[in-house]
Image 1 (cartoon, rainbow, N blue to C red):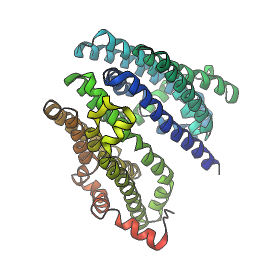
Image 2: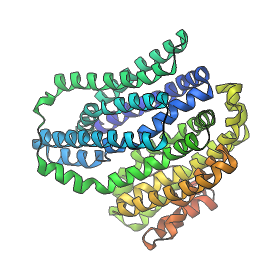
Image 3: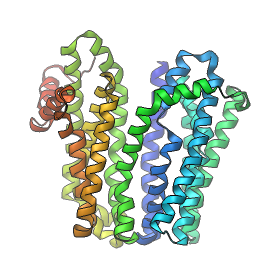
Image 4: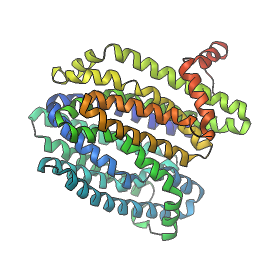
Length: 434
């Protein structure tokens, strides 16, 4: 019951964030227009890519260590904070280099600087969040994030109402992170202790680096993979085109929380099945992939049929050019959903390094295709590049290495039998994963 309540808080917060962020985002996009909306998304994409040096991909490892070693909690949290501070310095240096290479104008440089500051200010919140995840007290994190979401939404609506400039929408990023870190410090002090008790143990710092480098590399490849198309559009085309592309992808990627929630919920059942035998284990893996495929196809088909209508209704006539992008990009959700399910298999089979190679291969293919297709086909070419690279990294790649071929067979059954294994099982026994 404790774990159910913990997950419920997180699920409620994520669903609320999805819908409120989408609605407010549509309102802001209409107000800014494709040009300024593209500039804001370009700056945010640059920072998102380089902020991986702050995020580090260590959450799972730190949660594990906190659960296994609660007596040295302050040393573990201090080590994580130290690594994030070092990562923020690396990020700042890289941002300066990137701005010089791309020769950003003054407005873009300012937007990047403001959003980068907001990323740095999340450090304390991120450390406290990981602590509460390990303590199964994620409700505090959810309360903080829901408060931030409400305040941020009100500020954005106010900025639109009084007709403010683009600069102030970037400032809201900073207000968001100040609120997150400030509230988390207050709650931590009242419920747990003072952050001043955190101290640095360089032995633990070194251990986190050694344990976490595969996750860091995968995280770098993954975030670049997700954002590089927007950065390339911003540099190879213009910010108006990027605004159209961002509008389309905001709708197509809005669904990506679904596989994360489902996979997270079913992971314990999958891990337990592995202990019961390979037949039970692969039966559940197949059901999970079939479920992901069925949900994705139910999203993709209707969106493809009414993509232009959706764009015009939600964003207005200024964004009509985004309709075709949405129709193409939505089909990548099939491979994103299957990839989320397959990701748990890589973890269970202890093949994280192979998972990194998978992300890296997809990233390289995406960049190469974008270099060719964006100049020739514009933002539609970027959408096609994303679809092709996702299909390779989350499906075709699995056939290359003998260790991942069982997963390739599972995904092939889901794709070519249209989830028939799960449908047949539901017909006989109902939807069960236990």
